[in-house]
Image (cartoon, rainbow, N blue to C red; front, side):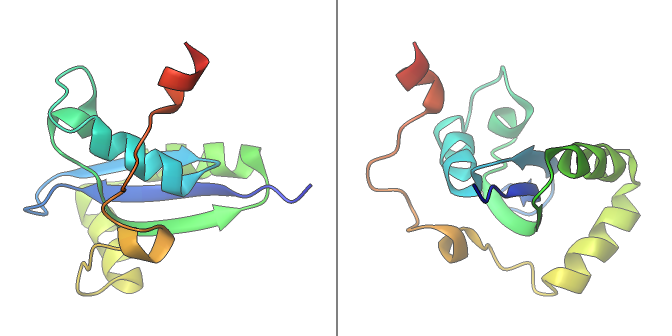
Length: 113
């Protein structure tokens, strides 16, 4: 089985806040961030960080965990340099991953419950 694990950075509509995360389903995770917008119980939700501006993938889960930790520990300046090397215009890339906005969004937690 070919699995892929993504480390990603999202931002809010005004591009003032950064959120670093990792997932094995980037499209679904973006939907979940979008569904959580305004939710004060999550960082990404509280700050409306559902716009994808950077991502990278690996086939190894441990590599993605380590990379996420690395990026989370970086200074904002270093993160900005990474983003601008990948996406100089800070274009929201959600549409590159899935149909956006999602038409029939669901949260994985609703299926598991």
